[in-house]
Amino acid sequence: MDDVSSPPRRPALPTIEPGSVWLVGAGPGDPGLLTLHAANALAAADCVVYDALVSPEILALARPGAALEYAGKRGGKPSASQPDICGRLIRLARQGQRVLRLKGGDPFVFGRGGEEALALAAARIPFRLVPGVTAAAGGLAAAGIPMTHRTTNSAVTLLTGHDAAGGVPDALDWQAIAQGAPVLIFYMALRQLDAIAQRLTRSGLSGETPAALISHATTGAERIVEAPLAEAAAAAERAGIEAPCLVVVGDVVRLRRALDPAATVEARAEAAEALARHWRRAAG
Image (tube, rainbow, N blue to C red; front, side):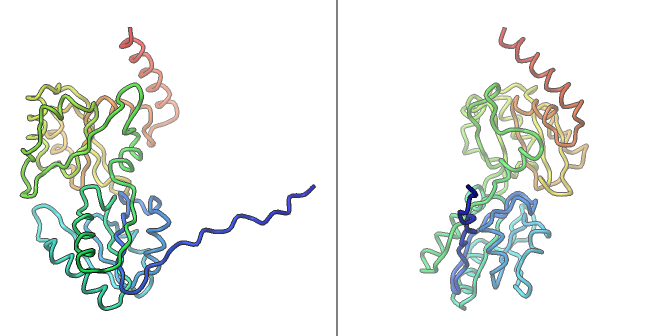
């Protein structure tokens, strides 16, 4: 008997209401990594207040006629203050506009999304929180580096590469970090990479630990450099690596040779076989 059941219905996605704000993660840069909620919000918003890590290709998806307002914060460059950004979101919402606050990656992972949400809550502005693909997950995966792998690590630590003043985050317990999770992923660490590497090695992490730097992850400008931890800062300088840049430290970086999307099938197969032999020897 033929199946006469109705086809599945398309999901009814929520829309931005006038006088409200959506805090939305835009992912690491590739428009294909936007969530459906993010794409739907771009198509409906009256005003898009975006940060420095939102790519032009993503902004091109905004509704025709929507106002695009830059409100990025980049270390060492003139930027709007966080209170100014929060105040602007509140004013736009009180004008009755449908406001999209678009932030690179995920708003709640080193993205100040919590600060902006609290400001909206205090001002009694209706808002919705929409998670995005954080750069650590999307950037590493697109580069062929898993965040976790059963053979290398069952834990991972995400860290910011600078404190509120732009310096090395010395409030961190570097010895605990060096001796904790086998994989460390740093956001915004390029300027302080040499100092971070020194703190990690002084705390017991080998300077030979594999490291990778991923600049402009998932975009057409993406560049990737691999080097031992102790040499990573110098390698980045020689290669002209620029921010935004993720830094991943740990043996999981070794998997990239077998998983590199840009490598040939033959090269990946050879690297996978070499890794398998290495792990068998390490297991005794």
